[in-house]
Image (cartoon, rainbow over all chains, first blue to last red):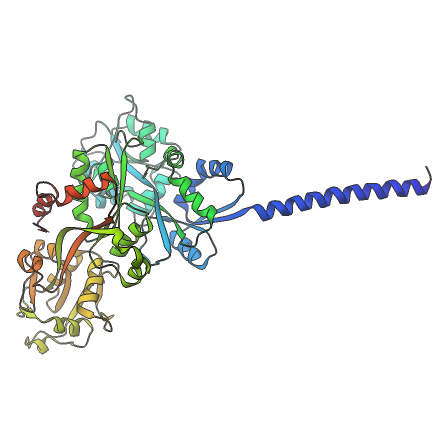
Length: 282
Length: 260
């Protein structure tokens, strides 16, 4: 092999590499131009719900969506939407800002939490004020709630868990469940502990309650301020531990944003959200 | 808590005015008890959202306690014939003072001067040892605030920042009862319920008669807003709300002013 053939070979090699590279690059460029950006921001509670199953399924149907989702707060999401830095804002509970005529607000699900006790407990109802004091360790004996003279054993969930976040934001006005509460790591563990301990009190998401509801588990949600946790009181917003979850777009929203909303509200989307713990709204 | 995840239910979304909300909560609860295959989902905010949700198609029924705001009216002017109102009940704003306050009547104009901060002392109205006037006002997101601004303050006048904002009817009635120099306004229903000292406005007390005949100036109609060609399920609920036997009976029971 003389130098010339060596050079030739190298030349062809480089040529091939370049050609493949250019083709790939061109392919990627086309891909990029075809992809439709869909940037979602706002309330973390909504993000967690969408993350679980829904987004994955949406992307199967709409692979062209270049989806980016980031959690934070409702307010920030709405401001980012107004400025056009995101396409879709996630909102927990209906915020009444300065009225934005160009915002379309879609209710996509409801999240709710029950305060649960052992089925044998004599306590049937708790006021929001007492519930607040129990979870902050200001009331520590069942006697103060009309029960037996015995300590209240408070169970909680890890930080960031949806039901715990709900309790802290909706019931405790942003304060934390007291550190003395025993932390349990699943809905199942919560249901089993409360079921086996007549002095226990804890909380569980609606979904957690339904999935752990079996005859062997002796747990019961308390009514709050005299309001039973049922479909009617949750839907009408009478039951206090409820968060309504919204997606907001602008009236000049992109096609892919509208498709996302339509998917979330479709039967399939609603079923996926329900599987992840929200109550259906459509 | 059973059956909640079933998709065989018909779900109707209702959205809008906080003044209408307690009525629809009560009627809706009875409605779902009577018709378990219907689920009503209510989001409380304000009248604008009630109108807008129907115009945008993001809910089935809007709850409204004011006229359609100008800016929205402009946006929908070519299709305003597609919408309809269903009158549900009447409400009024009551003006309340401390029970020891001797003043029994104020003119609309007096209220404007008081709440804009131009009239500062009770002696202007004949109560010589009344001292400074102290103001309480509902939260700006409350429907009463918007109604007050529209009816009492008018275009170029604003509630003074010296007025203290309170978040609930209860907070307002209690604060007024604890402060002999105070004056406030709120929906007439909780004002009557709390036994507050209500002042006449232009010689009229808010009563079912003066309100429904619009003799009392601070009245408002509580209405439901929907598409004219709405679904049968929505129409069935609207009929239930206005029927004397069902919705209107519940409204009377709650002490509100029914339409019949």
